[in-house]
Amino acid sequence: MSMSLDGIIGGSDVDTEQLLHEWFFEPSERNAEYIDELRTAIGAVVMGRRTYEEGASVDGFVDNPYPIDHFVLSHDVPETTAAGETSFTFVTAGIESAVEQASGAADTGVVCIMGGAETVQQHLEAGLVDKLWIHLVPVLLGDEIRLFDTVNPTHIELEPTNVVATPAVTHLQFAVVGR
Amino acid sequence: MSMSLDGIIGGSDVDTEQLLHEWFFEPSERNAEYIDELRTAIGAVVMGRRTYEEGASVDGFVDNPYPIDHFVLSHDVPETTAAGETSFTFVTAGIESAVEQASGAADTGVVCIMGGAETVQQHLEAGLVDKLWIHLVPVLLGDEIRLFDTVNPTHIELEPTNVVATPAVTHLQFAVVGR
Image (tube, rainbow over all chains, first blue to last red):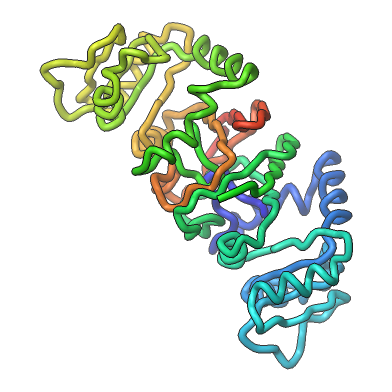
């Protein structure tokens, strides 16, 4: 997840989205390498229905940078799915089922919980998250959508496993070690 | 400021405070070096009245790790001040005055806005902050006191200037470059 220093991962205006994802869509050489490492590592994607609908409405996932199996948490299965090459499976049986199906599809790759914030929080609280990969964007955005806003005040301890510092973004990797 | 990955800088329980400041009070060798660098850099301190009262009630600032001039933002001047060697000046004329007085006292050192969160936010919003030095502690703490909670949704752009990664904490330095 791309996150501002004040914990914001999205917002209502285009400017917010652009500031958060510029490092990804117009990457420096070092960030392009990092993105390649992410693409190699990630074997399947889990996302919330709203995140899916947003992607579908923007470009139908035609230029999806992750052309791998996607599992969409959903209350129902839509009649038509987004165009493009990406395979979407709509999971109505809950987050454990989505992670289990995605783990099967990911083979030796990792399952990426791609968002939104509530979906990440649900997986964190259920103990289904092993690692946090945060792309810390150097900006303060103010009161928008916070990644960790409603995580219960249970202390979740992390261990920093990797830091890559670039001018546009600081990549922080953590292991979830306890709670 | 020591801040958890979810943006928390303090809380109601002892555990939260300990998790946030363990790197400082029981430092590894690398973190002891970093703390020395901070001590050398900081020439004066500005703090809110509540932060002062908390320090005074804990140990009267007797073991203050920053034995330099402190300027306390205040509505009134208390009759007695905390024991210990630290010089405290109570500033009732507002944040601009506090920063100006602290700048004079700091000589070539930097003025550290030591907290709390509201005090930092006030200085940020008034454009009085040049640098953010964040000690990012690898833990998610949940719903407590957030450093950047009420910053207005004006985008404040930062530039990463230094990153020091240690197991206990990731030290992030930013320059405030625009808004």
